[in-house]
Length: 103
Image 1: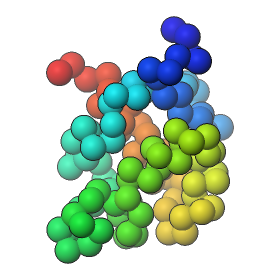
Image 2 (image 1 turned 60 degrees about the vertical axis):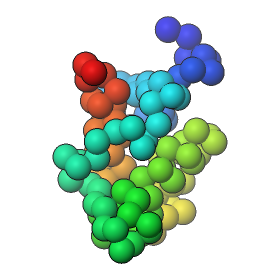
Image 3 (image 1 turned 90 degrees about the vertical axis):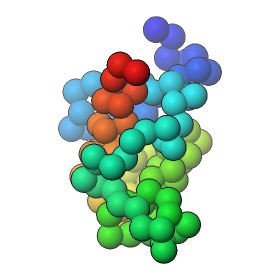
Image 4 (image 1 turned 90 degrees about the horizontal axis):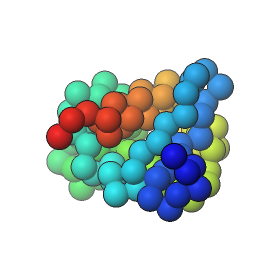
């Protein structure tokens, strides 16, 4: 697999991870069923009903947009107070499992 492929998003690996996470760019975060991810929540009255990191108003989509633009996970957590490293780890793992799940 060519990691420079424009069709893949290579998510920066956290030091605690022992693997890289590749998610097809076409597999946008809005295509993932977030209802089973404990790190996120959705309320139709907040942030237009978007999936957000639990306890915050930070959309999950913001994580993927920032990573696609080259940000590091540590930067994202710094830029978005209230979002924890554990939440980001959980979201990335959930996205990776969803991307690999049979349709």
